[in-house]
Amino acid sequence: MSEVVANVARKAFASAANYEKVRSNYPVEAVEFLLQKLGVTDNEASNTTGNRPFTILELGSGTGKFTRVMVKLLTGKKVKVIASEPLQSMCQQFKLMVPETEIIQCAAEKIPLPDASVDVVIALQSFHWFTNRSALEEIHRVLVPNGSFGLMWSLLDVSIPWEKDLFNFLRILHEGNSLVFPHFENWKEVFSLLSQHLFSTPEECISFENCLQASSFDQAYKHFASYSIIAGGSESDKKAFQELFNELMEKHFKEKGIFFEGIRFKLYMYWCHKEI
Ligand SMILES: C[S@@+](CC[C@H](N)C(=O)[O-])C[C@H]1O[C@@H](n2cnc3c(N)ncnc32)[C@H](O)[C@@H]1O
Image (spheres, rainbow, N blue to C red):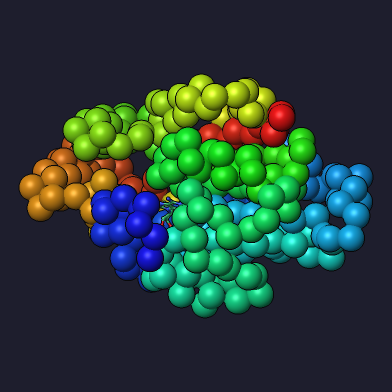
């Protein structure tokens, strides 16, 4: 197990089977869009790697929710996918879910791959755990010249009032625990901590959406309870979250007789290139 993984993440992701069950999947169109922005589906890019296949390294793969969609989309293409994940529980669940893909157990801060051996690095719903100089320098080291780095987060849709209320609660918990809250894009600050301008300025797309269909409040509650800040947090934070969730379900659905259909997300995608 990696030394650099935050305690809250270790605690939150200890049950990989639960993560697999309650977290949302990635929509194919969004995965396809990001791969295209990273030059993966571009045949020219795939042909410029000489003797080795065009290679994608995924960091913090978890149970392989993104990996399985990507691997399916890349069927028949000469592209090699290497997944990586620091936690053993996640690696084991990954092997059950995506047995056809290689996974290495490592943190983003210490990648056991040679210099300039990877064409694309991706981090899905995970970069907030390693927004530090060491990880970014490692990503830069393993990338080929002009290689691409892609990111995605699936975040609450704050245009929906009850999701906005949950968002505010989660924001305060993140701030209180000094954890990076991806909604605020403060993860971008790490790029300016580098001594040199190693990457191009990230471009972005926030027009894709996703939905976790949930026919019961309990199903939705279990989803939120798996968020690292709750699952890895204190008993009092868990209790406060449960009370808020119950209150919001009462106010926005039960009292109004509105049928609960699920949780809506916006997909935040970013991509940049290795410059030096
Ligand atoms: C919210 S999960 C996302 C998993 C998967 N990418 C997905 O989209 O479902 C965050 C993942 O980041 C991993 N992680 C935490 N610290 C990390 C680090 N320092 N380096 C690489 N991955 C890390 C966690 O173990 C966890 O599997």
